[in-house]
Image 1 (cartoon, rainbow, N blue to C red):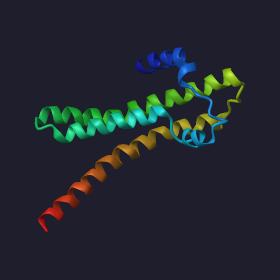
Image 2: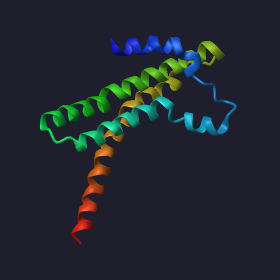
Image 3: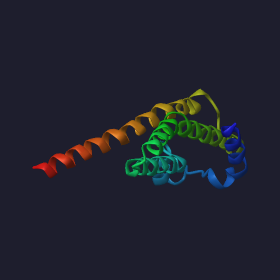
Image 4: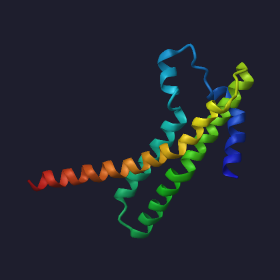
Length: 138
């Protein structure tokens, strides 16, 4: 239900959000792999993780851990996949781009990408804190 609302919202704001970057080589190279929505979602996830580390109340911390897991395991990839799908459909209507299986196949790669990002944030942070602790002991 939340994704359906998100898709109808994207249909309304599509002309302002979906940018044709074919003639802009430097921007197009970035948009081939990531979108602005990915940067926003990852930034939100990083802020949540930083807040999670600072909370002292165990019940709030446990709730934020569950939220972090849900965001990176399902909600972020689902929103990113919906955004990319709507972008493909928008440019098919706007420019007559061909929709085949390959330009929608990478949408499914959003799920493992966000899983890896969510796990990487935790692993890198834990490694950094462990290194920092060892450095302060010496």
